[in-house]
Length: 125
View (spheres, rainbow, N blue to C red):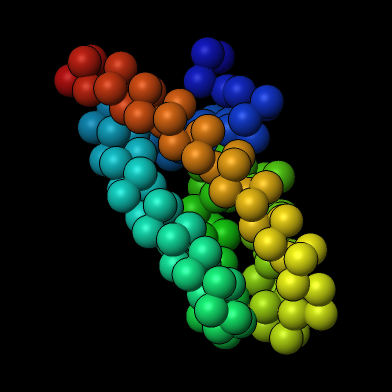
């Protein structure tokens, strides 16, 4: 399937399965992800910058299931590590920033791919 890109940690099989052939559902789900994900990444970024570990942990917790829903297990696992570290009080700030930046890079690449998939699917409506 052209919509699976392991290089970008993106597998939309689950989305297509639960969409049960509904292109509209796929488009709406992707649109919601495209809106919410940059906001959550921004929230985590801001919270980490201000050393607000509780807020960073909460935003990471909110992002985690979305990543799973969109078949991003690598990003989901790493953001869970960020969440746990933030909730535990962050022993190694540099390591947390490195992990978060890794997730941000992967997810931002996926956002571009998802925008393209959404545009293709909108053309089918």
